[in-house]
Length: 175
Image (cartoon, rainbow, N blue to C red):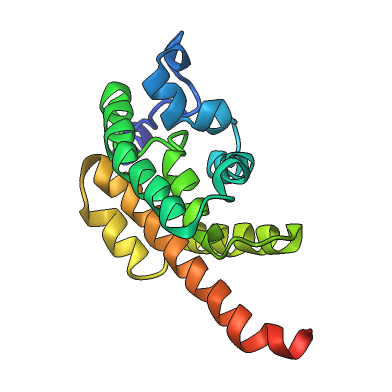
C-alpha cells in the first residue's frame, strides 16, 4: 500500500478564499469585517474585533442590549450558513460572526474597566477553543448556520456565568 493510499490529500488551507470573496457584504459580515481572514487564529482575531463594536452598543439599556444580541444571533444563523454554503465548507475557520455574538454574550455584565473586558475575552476564548461539553456535543450535531452559531453562543453563556460567579463570590473579597 502506498503512502498516498494511507493518507487522504489534505484540503486547501481555509485561509485561501476565492478572489473578491469579501466584497460580498454577507461574507464580509460573516468574516467579521475581514478579521476572520487572518491567517492564524481567526477566531481570536474575530473575538477581538467584536470588542470595539460592543462599545458602540454596550450603553443601551439591558433589554435593548439583549435584543441586539438576539438579532445578531438570528441574522448570524443565516449569514454563517450562507457563507459556509458558498465556500462549501461546513464551518470555515474564517467565519467569525459567531465569535462576535459569543463575545457580546460574555460581555453581558457590561464591564466598565478594561480588566473586565480582558477577563471576558480570556474566559470566552477558553471555552470556545477547548469546547467542553455541551459545546462540543452541539458543535458536532447541529447543522448549517445554527450549528456554526450555537457553540459560540453557549461558550459565551458559560463565560458569562463564570464572570457572574467571579463577580458574586470573588470580587467582594478583593475590593
